[in-house]
Image (cartoon, rainbow, N blue to C red):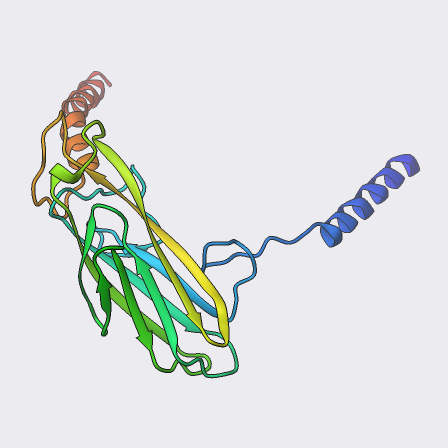
Length: 219
């Protein structure tokens, strides 16, 4: 018994020491680096076109966007320091195949680099600013000829004279030209995956339901 107790004690001490000396991973809801956030931070999100909820990314299994679709992005800039930041510059580089439409605050758009720039004069200590951006997916003729579904990344960065390195973040979304080689024009909300899948499994759901009914009758 003493032997087992000693082994348990040694194991407990080992676990304790491991928890103390193991490097900690900090969760970073703002920014893209995964390290401890800076005190001037930015969070980039894209709106799910089905639920209308803003999320970090929309992957290939999430709702996708077709040619002509409208895409909504959201930038949340937070000043977590104890000082006023001024001016604050936010640069949002839209991915290829998307073009800028509008934003809820004053901005400048460089079509050549597909970049939107915002300058906020002051963000006081502890304050948060939210920027909503509307973009549009280009024509199907601009899409890669050999790819039915592909994903792109939107990049955003915030800086200030007091924080020249600033912070950055990304949001991913996926584009599709349709199914079976077809082009879906102006399908702003419905993803290829989802609606088609429901119709595909309807026959199986019907057969399964009939089977349950027959099984109940036998009982």
